[in-house]
Image (cartoon, rainbow, N blue to C red; front, side, top):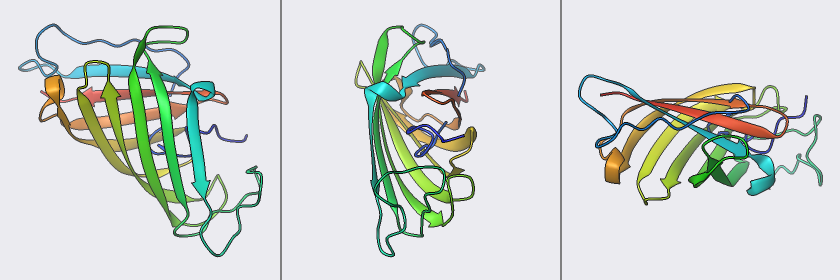
Length: 171
């Protein structure tokens, strides 16, 4: 199966299930003693994705299942975030990745960083060693605004035309 644009980056972090909801407790995103779970739906049709095929050039003009990545190739992504399929816009994801183990979509590995910029301008940053597979995990490094000092992990699951990212923020 050809991975979705999003899974190629989060890919960056991330690739997730077809629908999800955002659960944010009132007041603080990290209430004392309780983890907070945020889920974002990302339709590929509302994102942009760019591959920079650094030498040696092996990616080809049109990415496909036989395309090969080499160490140093770059991936960049910008994707709209929704609370669920057909739901309300929550913000935007920006991600950047570098291939660190060359190979096909199935075998290549990359280091990625991404930032979730939410409608209230709060941010959550993540980083990890990922693959283009259906599921990837990454670490939550921090945040701003209502997510100041965020820590935890990301699980990103991709389908053929979308991704869902679930961030678990520790108390």
